[in-house]
Image (cartoon, one colour):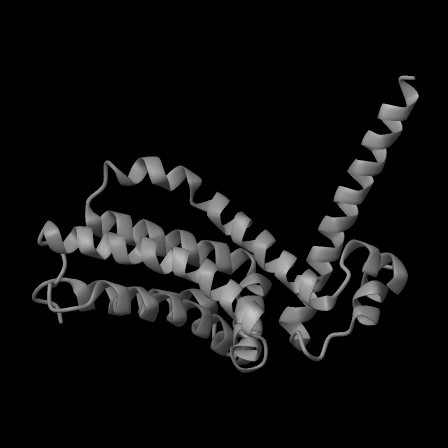
Length: 212
């Protein structure tokens, strides 16, 4: 009687590991080739799985893409978990710098994640409403977080009041994704960190009173 539950647990663990492998392969291939150009057969080959087995886990390529988006979203959220408590003790300027640094750090060590979002967002905006809406929902969480920090800074007179927090936050997030795609194109001659540092200075000086 005890063997059956144990067998089920082993199967569940294997299925969970397989799911992680599938998502990692999908993120990498979608980042390199885009969603539209990547086939399920290529994904199956990348993880040494039959197409039939892959379809068992994800009935459609769109299902796989949506799962990959959700998985990356959760990873990114986890990166910010420890900052939530710290933010209460920081000034608005310190909060914004922490938010920016954590975002940049995540993308520095997980370049394919940012490129994945950029590639998929560009493709889905005109071709797949369901995917586009899912990406918008995820990205808006980060945009609103940055916008709230800016609003707080305006109330505390740390930031300029003649800028719109939401539009500024959208500009920041689009800049990070666009920067990664641009730097990836010029990666032979342009390093990531100096470009990010330049963007940091522009953002902070641009929203600080007397600096714009």
